[in-house]
Image (cartoon, rainbow, N blue to C red; front, side, top):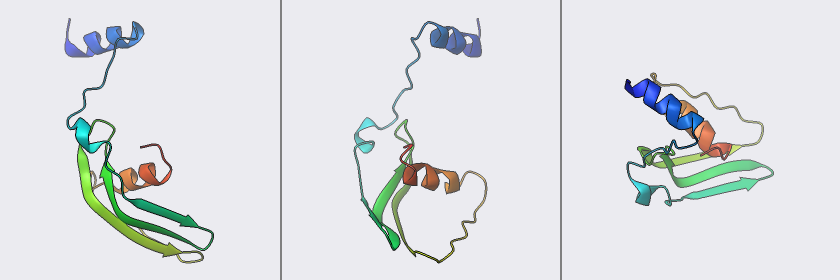
Length: 89
């Protein structure tokens, strides 16, 4: 049985656990300030659910009515920022 089959079998048997690379990092937090007129992130780490650090400290301030364009190469963390903002991560 190859690795893909093993993972599929584990999931079907509810045995699949995602290994944390750095479990101590998952608890790190910055400040996300949601106010009616702005969004401000101060030293917010972007950390994947497995503990992999994507960005150490992310800072952003965006006022209501302003636009923000996010640009970067594939795999640079653009989607990860929005996963943090939407509290998926």
